[in-house]
Length: 276
Image (cartoon, rainbow, N blue to C red):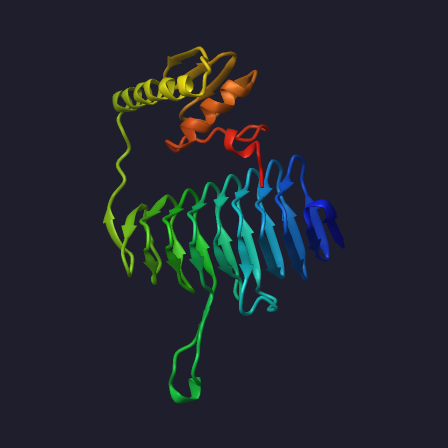
């Protein structure tokens, strides 16, 4: 099968192509797969991206920046598969799919993160090492700028990796890690109810300055965890939402996602309106 957008120089070739509603593409994208390509609803693939391998599946509300490179050595292998869950953000990363890579929901790969699934060079008959093994990243993981994840590694749910980390062994429990090789730094301790209320009040106070800078004045009311912005309602803990959206509520959603509270609706975040 083939899917093309000639005016954007977008070309997708695969045995099966499944592109859900409200998905979009930047310019200069090349996808060549032996198997299936899947892209969930409300997703965007940034420009100047290349996706090669066997099967590649992205969930809903995906956002990738420009320069994504999926493939690398061994991409012609039957295990050259990538599965990405819902609500993930992936930037100018190199994801080698010589072996299978599985990424969970709500994962962030910061710019210039590299995932490697094979390593070899001189002859194994002379005693030199080689390893071909997949990578698994759990839900809610954030991988810091220019970090590297090596073959055979699994990362547990809700881990935080500092910038320039090198993950050589599996991270088996939630926490903050950093360094080369990546080591456990500390646990993540949830805020109390009172602390959450104060933190949300702080967010709203800071947002009002941003709104004024953007020359807007949305009406915001807090009854924690419920927040009303104009005629739009969100729950800061469950991430549920209802009501009527507009450009002001989009601006608010875009702001609080920078505090890790991501409310995904059918409308893109503000900085996604002018896609590459």
